[in-house]
Image (cartoon, rainbow, N blue to C red; front, side):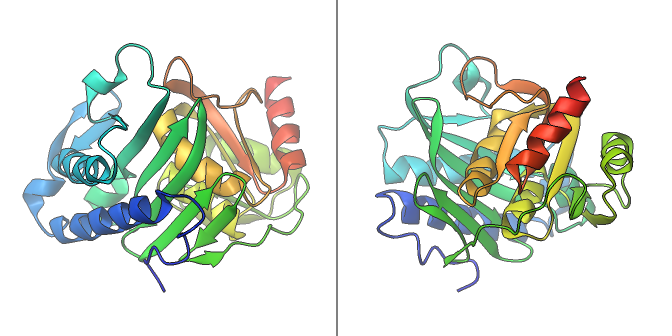
Length: 269
């Protein structure tokens, strides 16, 4: 069932409840989108913060706290939660990934949560409100789209398949990688998370970004992709370990781990 948490039950004791939480908050985001005040905001450095970001943070935090109040919430919208050492076990949330898409009327935004334990995401839920698409994953139990298991993507060695990025055509590093490896296909999409989920479902095969990315952008969709056999690394090929600083320079995500390593090796050479 589209946009339903059905199919996650039994895989993890909290999986169905966390999936229901992002679906509920995604529904609220879609409602709020008609309100110009919710879309208004201000620039904070290189990021535009809409009022809806803070609204979604409150709504998602409340729901996750209701699921298990012993698990703290770490969110980009709560600077206090980002100070000091990370908890051993915590909800890592991105209330709106793809704020620019949300504000400007494009469908490429999601709301998402990863349950991180000991530096590893153990469960994840990503919901795209405009298409009512729900991606979920549990470590060691696979990934699902709308409750149905996602099969492993077809092998896509370097140069095979479809690149994805958030511009109408490949630009910057995406164009460099496409030219170097010979990618002919291209798919435009919005948020970082959604692009990684598109790779997981087989609509695209490679996503490369060389701008700052943060753990809350990556944790949930990376688990979805890794649970179908793909790989996500930092731009230099090192793994995301969800420890220490939250910000990193870029990422490579691929359906085929060999393609991921080949691209990161080339970029680092």
